[in-house]
Length: 318
Image (cartoon, rainbow, N blue to C red; front, top):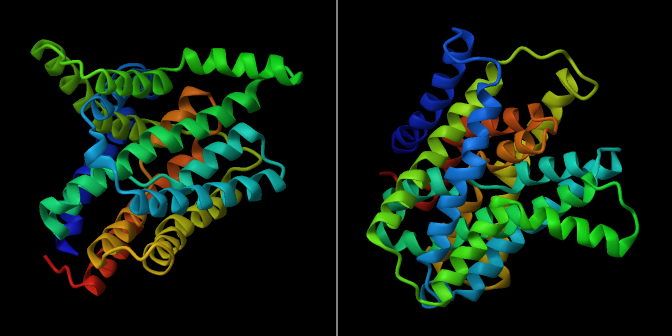
């Protein structure tokens, strides 16, 4: 548990730093949204571009692992999306809730935790999981949000509007540009690599500080806030920390028959707490972010226990 706690403490530290700065008045009332815009328009696109530009097909070609992790994420996403739509939630908000329940924090927690538990062998599966989460799952959520926000109902006009919106979205364009660079074997200048690394390194810490700033805001109780939002956040947290890794284990061990180490890694990656991506989307599209922020906080706190127990059961006691 100590090793897991040591990894999660900086996460809490950054969230608390943002929270304290807002409550003390060091940062103003628009600081959360403005910092989040920096992440969405600069830091995260740099991270996505850099990840895809340096990925190789040989490194990523593990179809059984890809299928396992993808299905675990997509099934949870689809389940929550359907439940929230059935309860009367708007498609855009339901999509944010769905990604909050299915978006593991592979980038910020997955890499260090994987190295501690599994060594350098964890890097490739974690890279695959990060690409699937940050590019594919993120893109699916963005498409659904864009569809939900469009007022046009004529199918072909709606499709064109969504495509135009996606073409202007940096979180869609940047990984596609990275794929193009990797496919064409383009070598970026050293100065461009440094520029990307500096921006990409700011994505996670700035997103966590932005989350703390958001949590510090005093908001009026809304229709789905209060006890209702608390129950939904607990539900999403439970599904994220328990149901998703259980599904990943069943797919990895029983359906695809992965090697024991890959089974364990798939389960641990699926059991990671919710990353800041859903919060970025909620803020960027000006949707209700209180459920998402609570889910991130609750799942991060809860994962100290669940991940520690999971690693102990697997025999990783470092």
